Image 1 (tube, rainbow, N blue to C red):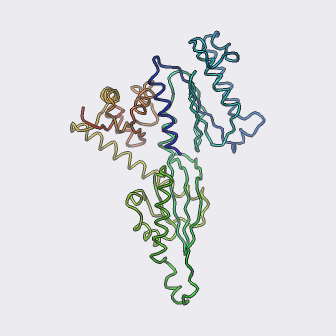
Image 2 (image 1 turned 120 degrees about the horizontal axis):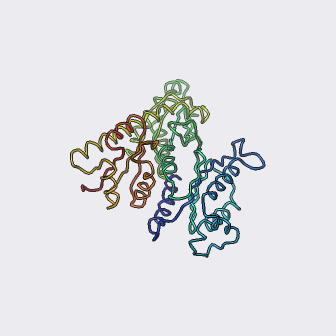
Image 3 (image 1 turned 120 degrees about the vertical axis):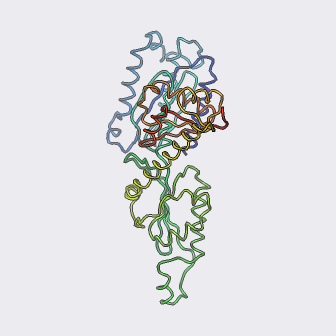
Length: 369
């Protein structure tokens, strides 16, 4: 699902980049979660925020542009009606909109509208001008989908959830149980007792294949945690496809019947540590490559140059963006990266601090410049 969001955003970025003149974009992040009590009032809180945000934006625009939005046609191409057409396009979309996710992200111009509902909660935000995509991309990077598979005698349970490693937000995407297909009616009691703590090879293979199939159907799953019966977890891991086994970050003692939110609480520290380790290694490797004259770039000037010639395979940025050298330009860097098909990685903590000592931004390249 999140890869679909990134694909849609790339299409919109291509529109922005190909425009003869850079269009003004209305970027909106709206907390529309129907479960939020503030959104259960007659007028939901997100609608109140949006109304106030639009008023604030219009107070800074030419009054001539503002007054036309209720009468303008989308087919109008006049520059004077750019905001009016943007506002009308937004209103047309919201007329039939019914919240389903937690955060609605909108990028609206006079000619295009991109809408996507994220399964995680961000902060309300509105901006008119250069498109604001860093929070959207951060959400795709930060809120990863984890598959937790728990084992018990003759059954396994798979829970797939979107988990923010540095926030309390969690969204359950899947919760299903696989049962053992064969029976043991002819087995003697003594045999059952001896096999109580393990499943036979056939069932282990069956569960491993089911886990492999999850990755075929849902390529957004980033990491795997195995739990419940630890002996069975190790046995199943041995039969996973190598590409799936590499995503297993831990085998933990998580009760088989634990509710999804308790599972999320138990794996949060595991996920956080795995993500920070990955980020630190990524930054260290990139810095070493750049200093050795290999396929990497450090600092705003070199990275920007690499983006201009479509040489960046991975753009690496600290989050949150607090360094003055990146403030005001980071969204433009991200637009370039998406347009050229670059992967974007945000790093935090120790990795971010290390990156800031080396120019605040880095990139791995397809070739040496």
